[in-house]
Amino acid sequence: MTRIIGLVGKPNCGKSTFFNASTMAGAEIANYPFTTIKANRGVGFVRVKCACKELGVECKPNHGSCHNGTRLVPIDLLDVAGLVKGAHEGKGLGNQFLDDLRQADALLHIIDSAGATDAEGKPCNPGEHNPVEDVAFLEEEIDLWFLSLLKKDWQKLTREIQQMKKDVAKGLAERFSGLGVTESMIIKAAKDSELNINEPANWDEAGLKQFATKMREISKPILLCANKCDIQEAEKNLKPLEETGNMTIPTSADSELALRRAAEKNLIKYYPGETDFTFEEGLSDEQKKGLTFIKGNVLKKFNGTGVQQALDKAAFEMLDLIAVFPVEDENKYTDKNGNPLPDVHLVPKGTTAKQLAYKIHTDIGDKFICGVNAKTKMKLGADHELKDGDVIKISCSK
Ligand SMILES: Nc1nc2c(ncn2[C@@H]2O[C@H](COP(=O)(O)OP(=O)(O)O)[C@@H](O)[C@H]2O)c(=O)[nH]1
Ligand SMILES: [Mg+2]
Image 1: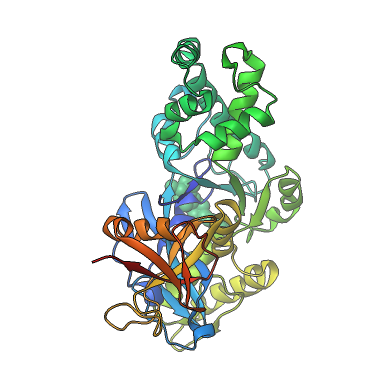
Image 2: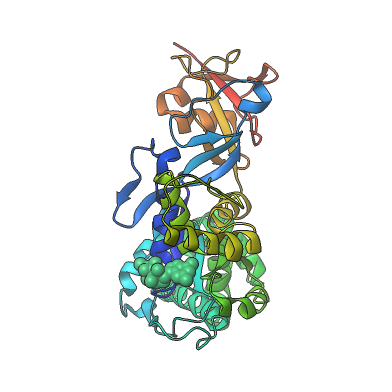
């Protein structure tokens, strides 16, 4: 299943800027065909150590790009409609918000850490709003939505599950499959809430609320992006944001967008995620001034703009994805046209050789005979679990 990273938060905190910066093709990464899928659905990129260096080949990516052994691999991004209070009751763009949210497997909560956006999402003077309040606000809104879905004919649902002697976790997972909630997530959420999974009819209101919260935490992990870190007032809010217990990263989406635009016009040499750039010819004084500000106040200070770092963290630390390189020739590491390391698949940890085959193509999955680890030439059975960085040839029956 394709994993999707959702950008969420109040209006005006920088979601669209973050989205535009992340999905911007740029000169280096322009060769992805579906950069914008829908208005708010696009393709961003995460950084992966390419196998090309280790294998001593020059890779030819079908999608994304490779620079000095760092490969940019496509990942789906969703710019979720701005959240307002009462979204779970359909307020504001509530239904749109929840509908978008359903599809996301991990959330980047874009926060105006400079406090220049008030509780309703309107611009205010930097420092006027306390961004820490936004953290609980978003979590509660999603929790209440999960809870309202749970409570909607809860009695009927639990009776049905028990009468049909259905597995409770399975029954609940079916009900919540549209939310990206799986059976194992349900079991974990019940356990973490100290609820007996076999007696859902006995769960009380407080238990249900707790269960909804756990389900949200497990199925929609959140990374806080302390955005607008280029504004001075952000500094004092970074620690308090971290102290909410969420993984936090300072970001400047505006800076990332400016850098990628300048790189696209060949005004600077900059690669996503890097902590510095170099000037090329042809910049105006004003452009130079703006970019110099970013160099000193963002890149140097925060080790990058944080945008690429946030995407990488979401993919590899929250979604636990690994990168595998399918090839058709295990000796030359190429596809059938002779292109070395043409593709990278991002798959969940624990993915087996046969599951990879199915991800490449249903036909390849159906005709799977075995896998071959191209680095060691070892044969791999259907259930062999793949490792990060594996280069894999799938052998099929004719
Ligand atoms: N200073 C600064 N401004 C930003 C940053 N990111 C976004 N903005 C500005 O914040 C405003 C709202 O941004 P937008 O992306 O439309 O927010 P959205 O409503 O969450 O999608 C715009 O004026 C952006 O230029 C940032 O990192 N730093
Ligand atoms: Mg927007």
